[in-house]
Image 1 (spheres, helix red, strand yellow):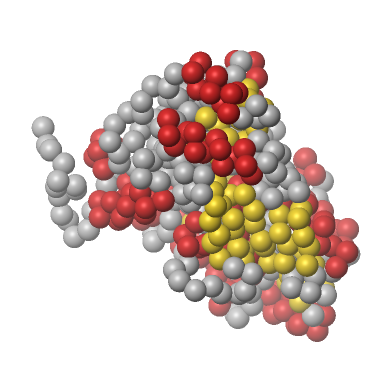
Image 2 (cartoon, rainbow, N blue to C red):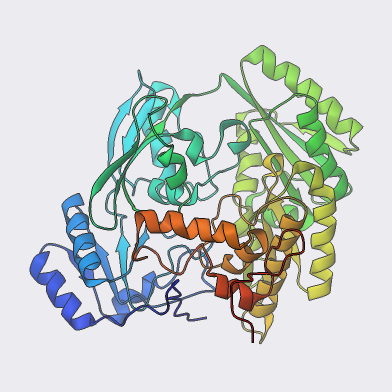
Length: 499
């Protein structure tokens, strides 16, 4: 699906003279690598959400901060939109380029600048891979906690932009909880520092505001992350259930028992079978659902917690509870979970990965609702997700070669997200809104809230040149979508003209 997605608050983006822009870039930035031929641009037409594709006008690959500064100043003067891209592993179309804009690829900023074991922090450039930080910190007995399933490939700049999580975020938090400082460039090329080397900094918490802002407020040029000591011990329990509802209820009962696992993940039968065929992790393929519960800390506490959680799982109706015998089996259990997405890809020509968050208590009902929607739309759904923090990742299986199936998958995904909102949840937990969920923003927020979001955007980027048309819908778009969130039965968007 090729999309020219250039929506702005005040109308369409102006047309850009590509030849004149390319000539000026070459004149003012002679050392900057610029891609402009179709065959060179093609690899950048989408991020990890490949259902949406747009050919960028130009792709630039800077290697020095000064090049990025000059590029932003030039684009600001010429009113040329800029979309930042890291490793391109995002799953919401956040790095979808514009036909009338520049795609700014930050992948070459891939140096680890400092690992400080005494201060327990690392300074890295935005193109550094998530896993590379932990690998660099490992000789000091430290690691970086947020671990998205794409950690072998995704970059820390993109993690900041999307506020990425991972299987261990229940105990150790999302990206925002593991940051000390971020260096950014404004849309005008001005250098700014958000946060500080200390645990707190004066003034408004702009670091938290910037985390998850999806490239709409500035360009990340350096990140200082917190490092944690590796836990003395980690054990994993694998619990099998004969229904997804029982597994969902068990999640809340573990937390209610006063135990906060390092990770608490759930997979349904479709995901279990796919992962087992792919990884051979030792999963029980006859189970309707499994929970993976990792408990870490000092040895005595871990042993006690394992026994407590085992009792909770058995009382919750688990048909079997297994503890990983050794580190190798523990690694296999997690390998199955972290490879569940590519494993499910073997079941269907295409799949659509959703991302919504719900209160833990709503897990059984929402899983039932997803099953009902799956039957209604005639598309299979595999559920694999961060159960401990209620971050759902339904995988909708479809075949894009069959007319109408992509549109049906999109419609089903939208209904699942709206179900999450209806039970008090959110349309995203870590993948972001991007292009994918912009309509569902209308279902979650009302006109006043959306207007406030636009005001925050305008404070950083008045001309709306950074990643325009993503994340925050216009009020007119919500009116056209027809799924506006309305408080107390008021008329949706009364300020808009009716026909």
